Image (cartoon, rainbow over all chains, first blue to last red; front, side, top):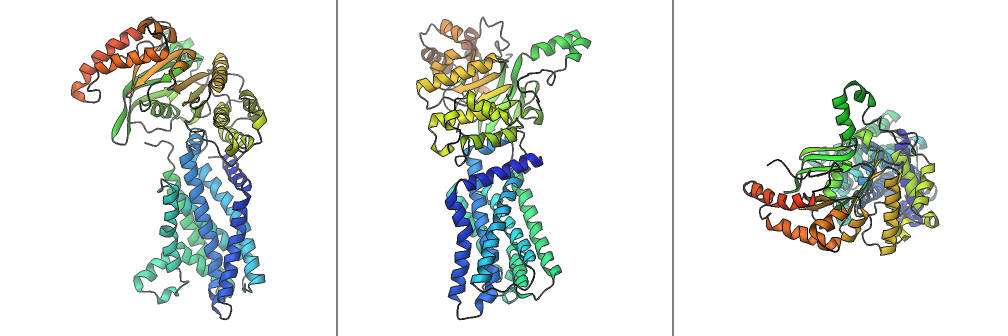
Amino acid sequence: MSPMRTMATAGRVLLQIRNDPRTIALLLVVPSLLIGLVAWIFDETQVFDRIGPAMLALFPFIVMFLVASIATLRERRSGTLERLLSMPMGRGDVILGYTLAFGLLAVVQTAIAVGYATWVCGLKIEESVLLLFAVAIADALLGTALGLLASAFARTEFQVVQFMPVFVFPQILLGGIFLPRDQLPGVLEAIGDWMPLSHAIDALTAVSTGNEDAAYIWLRILFIGCWVTGAIIVGSLTLRRRTP
Amino acid sequence: MNLCPGLRTDVQTFGRLSHLTCPIIGGLIRSMTNIAIQTRSLRIRRGSSIVIDGLDLDVPRSAIVGLLGPSGSGKTTLMRAIVGVQAVKGGTVSVLGQPAGTASLRHRVGYMTQLASIYEDLSVRQNLRYFARGQGAPKSDVDRVIDRTDLGGQADQLARTLSGGQANRVSLAAAMLGSPDVLVLDEPTVGLDPVLRSDLWNIFRSLADEGTTLLVSSHVMDEATRCDRLLLMREGQVIADTTPSELLETTGAATAEEAFLSIITSDSTGSSFPRKRTGKRAGRKARAGARTILTSGSGAMPGKGRTRRAQ
């Protein structure tokens, strides 16, 4: 592994996306549009104040999961991964390159979504905006890392899209958006407490309401970070240089 | 890293010092350095079937070696083993004297996969620039390989918009980055028209003249005549290790295609149980008969008779 090759990979992934303007538009605009829609639905109620921060956690996570899982699946299937692994390129260079590139995209995506949610939809942010970005980036990296991992279990594009409900939906259901986690049945509450997305939602809610201190938020970022690291390690183990 | 891509050096593989200290070992090493790729008792299993079972093979240096055979005969699997991306069940594969897939070999071996293996959403130049950084090749190499493969006119075109032949050449250009000593090319001419095929073979020839070893697989038999040496594979075995002229001479056929058909026919008659332990000996013996004819008179080449095992 070398920083030069990792950066080369990140640069290449960004270049691929830059050559695809429609994907850029979808990546950057869709989350804001959906947040706007949710705000509009709950226009007459206080609900958006409660679930708005969670929306900011959901979109980078889902979008990055999809983009990362499909991009890596394509890499595995097109033969380019085989070419890279027959070169001095390390597995870590490939995975970290992807993580860096998508992390950077997530920053831009979040900046637009947060700007839209606060200025247009009236979402309140009590804590520092910097903290909000830290959570959002961790969240997007989580989506990227799980997407890379999911691609290892899929043989086709059809399968990889089906993995989205498997990896993502349970986390949304148990994350406390529909019902606060402490009101869930005991077993589900325990599972939800260990899901990384739950912590992203908690942290973003805390940033928005200002009810908790910065340490509480950083602890949650750390928890997400552990999941990201774990998923990247397991994911890189699935990128074997020698395949049967 | 080879800092001067134009200059080739053997010091990395076998130091000349050992040659000075011990004449016997030195001589051995010298003869070994004429061999670019060597396999011994190579066994590869893919899924539940054994694709390659006990393969011994020698590929001489600075030559174009054609790896020919019907599809499913194990050509791609063997090539993957040589570049070090194939899990091997038993035996050894060495390239330039080192075990295949060793980290220090990865920039000395170029690999062109059967599919074009390039990023469709990048331009030709962007693809090559990335692969050059991955390969540790200098930036200037990108222009060199673009020039070499005659892709100057398409350099800034997205790979998605290229024709099949152009995409193939980008893939070849990528394999040529960093001037590797060994190029492993898996069906580089498949689906190309005769003019493009001829262009590619001219590139291969000039690379071999510069000292590159090329292992080129094909199932287009008339390409055999453009190789220095031929390996005919069938069911994971090399059933002939010969030269184009010898091939025609020994079989008495007019074209390479006919020659191969006649070898395959004579090979099949003795190999009714090629995979079973009980029938192995008998099958081998009968097939060795066909091989004896085909590997005769190739004394100068190191690949002589390697496919025959002690019986």
